[in-house]
Length: 223
Ligand code: PGA
Image (cartoon, rainbow, N blue to C red):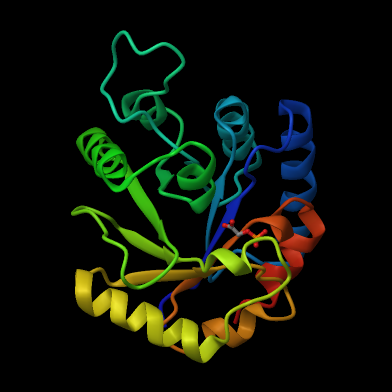
């Protein structure tokens, strides 16, 4: 396998101050243990935290990439409250689209999601696109697919590595996308099982990314 991809999704958590505290602590742990040498780490933070994080990441010289958790389906313009892909391009490289929480609580449907992916690609950003089973459509242009069964998100229950591997293989074959993540209650104790399958290229982490030390522990177990 190439370098494992470890993507953190903080969801709707952390003030600017808390996010910078997390980064300082994580950077110290990661540097001491040489944790980031063979890993690709993407930190998907709330919009409000991305610019301060970008400045601090550069100052600390820590090799992590930043991502947003959503994007407007429209280009810039009269869309009050929306953050366009071009605005994100200034401060991050990745965007998560289609997370099940966006689908459930904000009624996002396949058509909206395809529009978001189009905006992201036009701006030159990369997409992590979430699906909860192998039958869900994936728009053109997606860089990484994340398979996250609904019942595994935030529940402490995970899919088996075998079933997750079979699911991502079938998504890869159907879409032609070469990179896939598993997400849903991944922690430092179970991450290795998913990565060892060979067909899962990385993991998408919610709860276990919120504390710097548990996230650092998870990265160190990601072999
Ligand atoms: P969890 O969340 O790790 O807390 O289960 C995963 C996700 O929602 O991406």
